[in-house]
Image 1 (cartoon, helix red, strand yellow):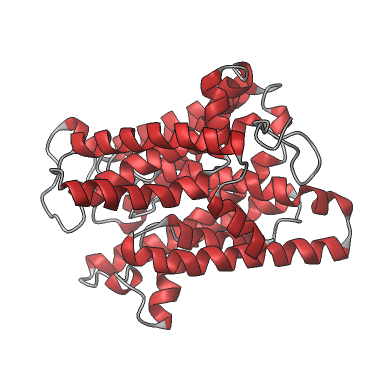
Image 2 (spheres, helix red, strand yellow):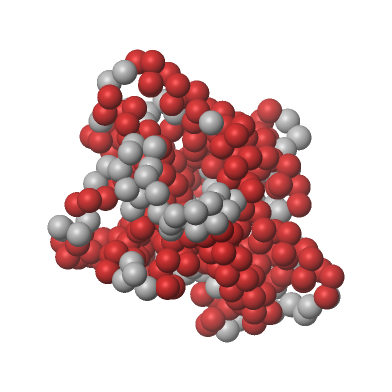
Length: 375
C-alpha cells in the first residue's frame, strides 16, 4: 500500500477488521435519503396539493410508504457505528476509558447539533441536528447491558405513543398542539419541543432506532449464523404491523385516540405500528444489505459502495451543495421525475468521486474536520 492506494477497509477503533456490511448499507441508505430530500425540496415544501398517482403517494415525504424509512435505516447504521466506536471501552471496564469515550461522543454530538442547527436554515429538517442529540444521549448509555438498552428503547417507544395519544386527544378537542412542531427555533420551548417531540426526527421515538443499531452492532458477527431466522422474524413483524394497520382502516377508529394512534402508519403521528414496522424495515434492510455485501465483497460495485459509505458525512453535505448548484442555477422544473433524475446524477457522481477520494486520499474533508474537532 502507498499513500495513494488505500484499502477499502482498515481496522476499527476496537482493533478488529472493518465490517463491509454497515458501510455498504450506509451508502445505499444515503441514496434513499438523497431521493426523498430532493423530492421534498422540489415538490412539497410550501405546497398544499396532495399527491394523486400511486407512485406520487408512495414517494410522498409526509405519508408515503418510503417516508422516513431510509432515514430510519441511516439512524440504525449510526447506532452500529456508535458500538464500533465504543466497543473497546465497553469491554475494557476501564473508568478512564469510559470517561474519555463519553467526552468524545459528547464533543461529536455538540458538533452535529450546532452544525445541524445552522444547516437547517438552508436545508429544513436536516437529520444532522438530531444526530447530535442521539450522540449526546448515547454517551450516557453505550456501556450498559444489551437488556438495559432494550428496556430503554421500549420505554422510548412507549413514551412516544403516549405523547401521540395525548396529541390526538387534544386534536379531537380542538387543540392541534402546533407548538410541538415549531417551524423554527425561537425559544427554549421551541428547541426542547423540536428535539424531543416534534418536527422530523425527534428523540421520541428515533433514539429507539439508534439503540436498536447499537444492539445490532454488538452482534454483527452473528447475522450470518442466524440470517434465515432473523429475516423471517423481521418479515413476520412487518407483515403483522401492516395487516393490523390495514384492518384498523376497515373500522372507524378516528374518534378513539388510543386505537387510532395504536394502528397509525403515518410518520408524523408516530403510532405504535409505525414505530415497530419502521424499525423492523430498517433492521431488515441492514441485515439483507450486509449479507449481500459480504457475499459479493470482491465485486467492484461493493467496493465502491464500501468506500462511499465511509464518506457519508461529506456526501450528505455535498448533496445539499449539489442541489443548490444544479437545480437552482439551472432552473429545473418540478415533479418526481426531476427529483429522481437529480438524485441519480448526484449519486453516480458521489459514488465515483467518493470512491476515488477514499482510494487515493482516505477520509473525506468533512470526516477529517469532524474527527479533528470531535476526537
